[in-house]
Length: 182
Image (spheres, rainbow, N blue to C red):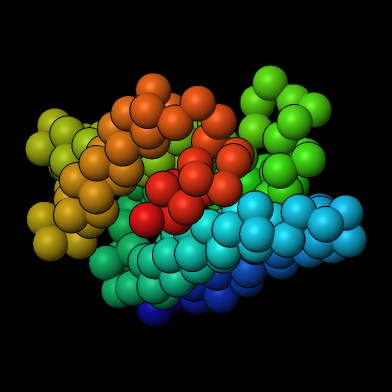
């Protein structure tokens, strides 16, 4: 492996880990305030949702960043994937900031909106990988390296959240958060 590829392989997961650390710091900050104010059940449900979503994306993205398929990508394809993964992680930072019911009460954009944005970014990225891989040789990659199953799962979750929004009047209520967690 040449020197540039080695640096990319070391720095990209490290930077992602730092961003995830910021996300967890934001979550702990608002979770602490939330738990002190007495909304224990709702606060815990939102925190658990954040933890499950963030761990799924963090582990998946880290595994992708250290995979041989990712390391072998040409510069532009590597940069494209890395920017998308960084964008996803920034969404997770905002999820952390909105990991309390109170934080969502003061804003028109909150946890659920950032969760939907995260899922949409992931689905759009995966679809774009399939399309770009077929259209441009520069973006070609092994078909098994494109996580199409995650696109199906996240598409389902997008629709589930939208439908849930119509069924439950307040998604930040205990009932709404339990359904969201399921």
